[in-house]
Amino acid sequence: MHVNLMPSNKIIVYDAKIYRVSRINLPDGVPCLPYLDANNVERLDCFAHAVEYDIETNQVRPLKINGGDPWCSSGGLSPDGTLVSTGGFADGARTIRYIGGGCTDCEWREYDQTLVEDRWYATQQILPNGEFILVGGRKSFSYEYIPQAEGQRSEKAYQFPFLYETSDIDENNLYPFVHLSTDGNLFIFSNNRSLLLDPTNHKVVRTFPVLPGGSRTSAWWDAEEPNFTPALYNPEKPKGMRFKEMKASQIARMYHSTSVLLPSGKVWIGGSNTQDTYRDNVKYPTETRIESFSPPYLDEAFNKYRPQINEDASQKELTYGNLFETEFSVEDSAGLTANDIKVTMYAPPFTTHGFSMGQRLVILKIDELTEQMQGNYRVRAAAPPSGNIAPPGYYLLHVVHRGIPSTAIWVWIH
Image 1 (tube, rainbow, N blue to C red):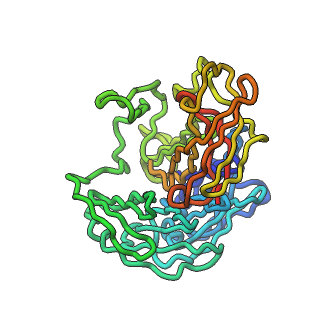
Image 2 (image 1 turned 90 degrees about the horizontal axis):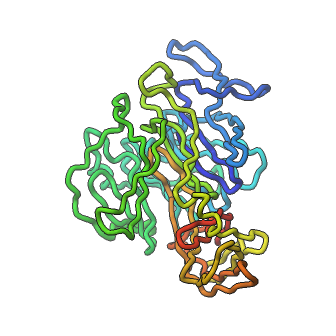
Image 3 (image 1 turned 45 degrees about the vertical axis):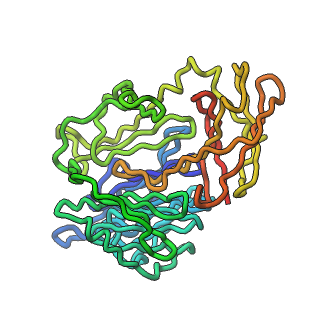
């Protein structure tokens, strides 16, 4: 399962096409997709392999994928809010797909054979200028840049020996971890090694010591002993006390499960499939139930301390380095000062296989907090100074009061 929260408050969810089945049919009137089976007999695929999930109504809208298979692909939100999906399996390994970007009832726009190399289990990362870099993939020891104009072909792949050196018999360099550092370089972690890469001149800036071990299992057909208990990590607690166990789920979330942080502060959780195709009569069946997990900070006992953003009176278009204002109210705000609140910007990531591409949380510098009237405030904060800190695009902005977050509003920075 692959997911990304969109600025429309919809989640795009999609899966593999190879098995030609899902649990949602294409809508009436949408033509089925012809294909040849293993015996070269023409069949019809009448199933939806993608949906648009409305987080406010819990309704889904089936989406048709016409082009290459997006199984184990990569993705991310572009600066205009379009989901750009790249690569995948077999005929989808060089496909670029687009959905969103201001349209209503959007459908996929697909361009097969537009990448230079196959990108199956590759990682996509947005850069400070809003461009995407695409790193690695199964037996692809290179990276390339995704053209910013829709439908254009990628021009060149840059060989990256590091990915060959970190590949082993277990292919432990699939979905390499890529993070944009605040100096504009890319931190890339693959298998048991890591480095800093300058994406503008293609030079390795720094290498880091090799970590011991590095082997891991994907649980493909080997799933056992699921972990039902979520844990809350607090980096400010003393060592040995930073993880706190919370209420356990009743649903096994294993290989091919995923999650999304919602504007409300809840966590949307879905998926889990540890074998090929959709299976029910197995120990851990294909999981299509969705859960909404509420962290402790959403306990009703904290409602009187929870900020409420006045969206209509708040600035939602931000400019790098400039000050902007957000209005909010708090029911119980006795003695509230600027030290009691944080203003944060969260980049909604593309999430698959327990890995969130492009995930980013920026805590902003507060310039001034003023009380408009009792319980109503205006906070003036500094927008991030550059794309190194926050690449251009859409973010969820929260006001956090003593650890209790507001429901977020969408802001756009450029």
